[in-house]
Image 1: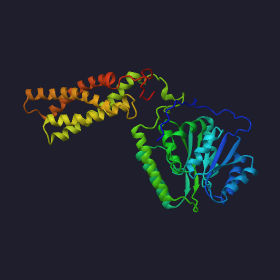
Image 2 (image 1 turned 135 degrees about the vertical axis):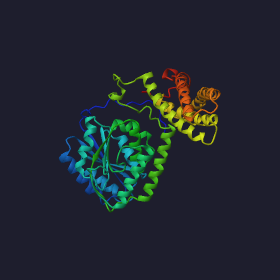
Image 3 (image 1 turned 180 degrees about the horizontal axis):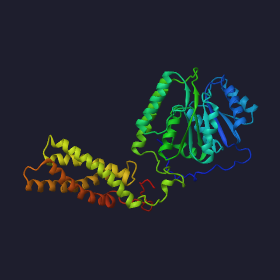
Image 4 (image 1 turned 30 degrees about the horizontal axis):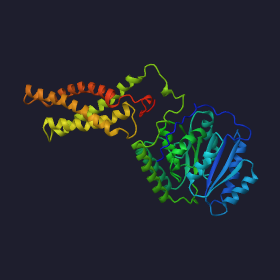
Length: 424
């Protein structure tokens, strides 16, 4: 994955200003490869629709990626015939490459694309880009999987599409409904920040862009579309699905290891209400205490369940040590990310080692409590053991928070030169 870490920032989300003379508000890109028969009807139909319904200046850019038939000649003829049409030629194949190249060079504040077969009803185009023009959203996608969408396609493609989007939800926690619909738009300022982070140059380009945008806290607007499958589609379903799954694995691994520099993209707009100090919402130390308590409660529950399980096969001291060790590792990892906002693998091993020292202190407290209980009552009831352990853990928890905050995850502000936090 690319790791461009140069400081970048996006302006506050606002209504796009009027463009200069000759500069379109919208640039619709049509990526094509060997589409000499369909290209002209598509462009003419789209041009007529935009001329009749779109209230701003527009451009249509044909992005020809390495066609070997007459597609480049058709694109050049259309560009000569219509003032709003341009042609761009790439010598290497790849839909993602074509989109990334043209979008990066465009001067239009809103960038969109659609497939050459125009499977999507063009009446959805204005609702797609309007939220971007108004400043309400950062990206917009057409969705064939919402309840109000009307879709005509074969059972095989329907099954593959829904299965793929379920995989995205389960593996990458994606919340958008339709990753691969060929009908999307993005603000140019957002594109210029996200595109350098997108590696894929093929069909997975859409998914990768959306996942990164969502993880960066950007707003994705979904538009229900009417969509009719093109039976002449030349997309190789099996190969595309295989490449998509490889992309899911690559992006998931990058997100899990923290190798993507998304920290600098999180909450990129100054008007995000989550960045405001709101009365009654914990900030700073109070926020960390809330996060620590939530993690601590879950860790204690995990510890008790583990202890009860280990107690069936081992003595109380062994069961306590094993349960505390497992829950301590999980607790340190959870507090590292959720309570103190540390991302990436840098310092993770050191944090776990320091966490184990804190674990040792907790073990001494809880083991000492068990030893004292055994001295007082040679065969205490299981409920009594649990009650003593809960009390000991409460004392250890207070000490653990202080040590985590002051020692393990001590302040690493930019002034110190080692900022590893969320930056929120």
